Image (cartoon, rainbow, N blue to C red; front, side, top):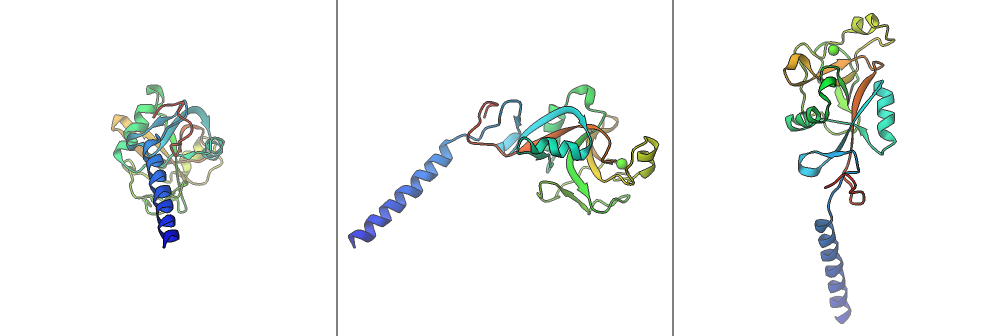
Length: 184
Ligand SMILES: [Ca+2]
């Protein structure tokens, strides 16, 4: 019986201590990264202009991914992070499609594998305008990668774009308990 109670109190102590530690430590972003509201993500805007695949590789160097977007609020955060002069050029997000086609919103997915449960495509997008790629001398035969841009100042809308086009981009990573150089 003594042994039973001893075990109970040891387990209780360990569980309560762990809870206390988890609730008292901050979630932080590293220097240069911004925490979006609610503290669920750290975002980093890169003004380097890379193809979608090179941008995805660049984010990976920081244990990060190209960003997924799940709400108007996240869209607004991206707008806030983007320098004004780049708002109209398009910024890579982590969306790709398995079925590039005009109006086919259902076959898009996020590279970070979070649910594609929100979309903000602009009018007549996705367009899969292949000629738009070839007209620019790009090798793409489809528009399979997702960019966000301030189309005609109507806010931050999405557009399917030729993946080899070079764009600035947004990386995302989970907040960390250990690197608070960018603040809480
Ligand atoms: Ca398009």
